[in-house]
Image (cartoon, rainbow, N blue to C red; front, side):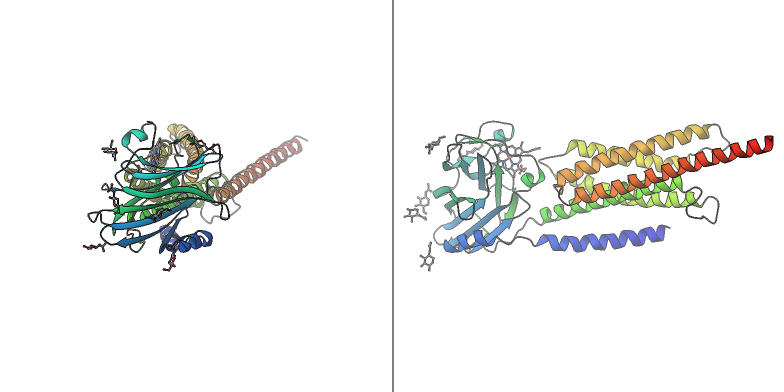
Length: 399
Ligand code: HEM
Ligand SMILES: *[C@@H]1O[C@H](CO)[C@@H](O)[C@H](O)[C@H]1NC(C)=O
Ligand SMILES: *[C@@H]1O[C@H](CO)[C@@H](O)[C@H](O)[C@H]1NC(C)=O
Ligand SMILES: *[C@@H]1O[C@H](CO)[C@@H](O)[C@H](O)[C@H]1NC(C)=O
Ligand SMILES: *[C@@H]1O[C@H](CO)[C@@H](O)[C@H](O)[C@H]1NC(C)=O
Ligand SMILES: *[C@@H]1O[C@H](CO)[C@@H](O)[C@H](O)[C@H]1NC(C)=O
Ligand SMILES: *[C@@H]1O[C@H](CO)[C@@H](O)[C@H](O)[C@H]1NC(C)=O
């Protein structure tokens, strides 16, 4: 059994890898935005499809100073909203320390752009107000291009020669709420946390290889957890509960037990691998966390491990502890299945794969629940029929 599990595991990993190589290169600008950048003689364009949907067009020139001409665009669909883009000249591509250009869509219909110094105080809730920043910015404008339905920040930035434009941190963000000139808190989802990049402005190449790796790791974590904890484990439970006497004919008496153990071992290997990747992801994200999802994950791993260990401590059939052991093993098992289901939904929400992964997973658990239901009913009918038969036999014997 372990060899077939291994083959399954390897083929899955290959499938995952091929999936990733597709997702890495998806940074073409939309045609509309691209034609706007071209009409402004900008030479490079990049679209961050999964990171707030922001598009970024620019041109750099190296004369006495380095001149960076930028155009940043996104859709702001709400009544108010804001679009921010900036450079972080500190060591890391992150929010705190960003010298930002922010455009605000006001309730009264006007569009105003200004410069903002995003400090550590903003993260803890202080008001973000316009101030001069550490960049020499000229001709900053914010506006709405009606024909492409985009809100656009445009500016020219003069960077001193000391700034290395071949490796620079840029940060962007989109928010839904603004009051006056003050942008309010953006949402706390992965797409808001991922909206940073180390970029070579001369070529547009992303140098934050780690963030691409992180995206792949998240997908791997999700798929392995769903397959391991969410699919194979419940199938093992079905085998243990309903396959003791058929519908498959086990040629040995206890063969269903081997099938159950094989399933649980296989599910455990997948799930635990996914969990290990999850731990790495949790460690990796210094500036944000998903504490509930993580806590559920730890308890799933812990109790699944206990279930596996419990098999070794299983009392002998004739032992009176055997009943208690069975009750413990069963109730923990079912509780585990529920927590797994809850946490998979939490994970799908965090990954923001609600359009594709969620229906797939719902289809999977509904079929599993359906199988449970069908077996439960047939078992019940069988039980009733047997009862009737034995009653008839009893009455025959009496007469
Ligand atoms: C309007 C006021 C703002 C508030 C109150 C705010 C608050 C926060 C908080 C609390 C986090 C971290 C969440 C966590 O630790 O769980 C965060 C992350 C982040 N924010 Fe903001 N933010 C604001 C504006 C901005 C702006 C203007 C930008 C972009 C220029 C931005 C970009 C980011 C990025 C990229 C992250 C990901 C983590 C990091 O790089 O530190 N935020 N924000
Ligand atoms: C773009 O470049 C062309 C050719 O160099 C020039 O004629 C045109 O004015 C430029 N457009 C802008 C918006 O700078
Ligand atoms: C820009 O030009 C200066 C000299 O004018 C040169 O020292 C520097 O390396 C150039 N920078 C880039 C990124 O090409
Ligand atoms: C931006 O804020 C930081 C931290 O408070 C401060 O050290 C820096 O001088 C500010 N920059 C400008 C241009 O005001
Ligand atoms: C900003 O850059 C322009 C063009 O190089 C220069 O004339 C101006 O003095 C600079 N301003 C500041 C405050 O550095
Ligand atoms: C800024 O805008 C003014 C007026 O529109 C224009 O004359 C000037 O060339 C612009 N400067 C830059 C650096 O684009
Ligand atoms: C909208 O409000 C802002 C201040 O919040 C003001 O500066 C701007 O002039 C107003 N625009 C219109 C069209 O009333």
